[in-house]
Length: 405
Image (tube, rainbow, N blue to C red; front, side, top):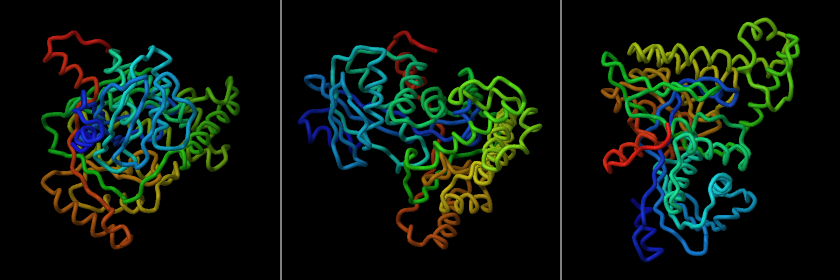
């Protein structure tokens, strides 16, 4: 790995270790976790590596192969946000300090295996960094602590109105299983691929455009959904409390159906996406359980259409990719990934048709956006273990007890 080589070149010694966190994909359940919905997801066999070692005087010193500027702060005082790529890691330092006293700093080199945009690289880099920082400080986090600390960093330090989809997928996933998560209480099921299911792989189509959640309309969309739910509470005569504590999960589908026509158009669309996505996730989990990948894929395509029409997200490039995917033989289903403001589209595909799918999608996409030739990308992936499953496997090999869930 390049990060390991660069660490050796900079510090004149080998890294003490390599931490890794996978990216994730969410075929059904997008834009619902922040209001306590349900989601489906996989970790994939691509992600973030951090070559690391302890540093003197409690300093955190980091470089990234994706960004030119190195960064530095104190392990006990990460300071305020600066608007650069390392804010997520300052936030992780800040959040970890609230639960554990940190004495050892860290030096490290970060390497992402794919471009930034839609695969939750922000959660992955936080989790990989936390794994490295806790190792040099002799701290052992449970899976739930990994999830909660990473979430705290991104929501309360960086300032993104996210839910816990990303962190749960990247920590709890198990290879060849679908993660079916209820964000209201954190309960989850790992549903194995049915032996009768047709073969599949996970395809990633990179639009050629990178994006940043804080610079997109992500937070505004979440606020519009919450405003719609807040209004539904008022219209139905329910106690509606504080706006920031309102969640769509608090209001039943029957209430939404009764009062949705009285909502402003934008709020009604956001609610329409959330409530229909909730039902798609439940149907999708059952389709996966019985091995019906065609129905699961159809629901994923339906999810993508709702994100475009009702959530009103998706850069023109992603929307075009989605439309091409829907017209391509061998793709069971898919959608654009993440918040939908640039980045990747993901799909579940028939691996026997991977070459045809790659060629057709690229050809049709570049007909519309020829300026992205050389930037458009295709990657074929497998589902993978999250941090908890990999740590458990390491512990079993070492004969150690496993902590956490």
